[in-house]
Image 1 (cartoon, rainbow, N blue to C red):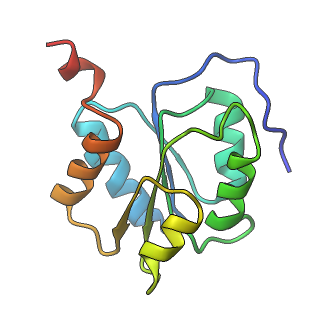
Image 2 (tube, rainbow, N blue to C red):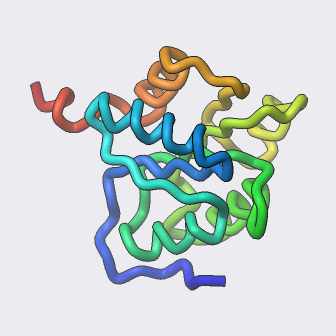
Length: 137
């Protein structure tokens, strides 16, 4: 597994961790169109690599069921790291007990798949805030 240390400064980006390529692309496109800086990862291992490269994200949208390193295990890794333990997580999943699973990993919020664009944006704005370009105006 890649290390969870980085020499880069902390980021101000949203990390979308989702194994469904279409959903990952839609979430990134929608958030990007709203002015958010977005990075993506197809699983927990790619998420750790993205964090190692780009620095600490401001928010993670996290699927739970993924290959290689799933969302539960990724959340545990994040929570055990002093630098990453306070990064807000929003679970995005079709899991039948999503509210309980989100609470178990310390997520700030959860979205049940399929996710409406309006609900996605509402939750991201509530947890992350407005994109930097809008917050400055």
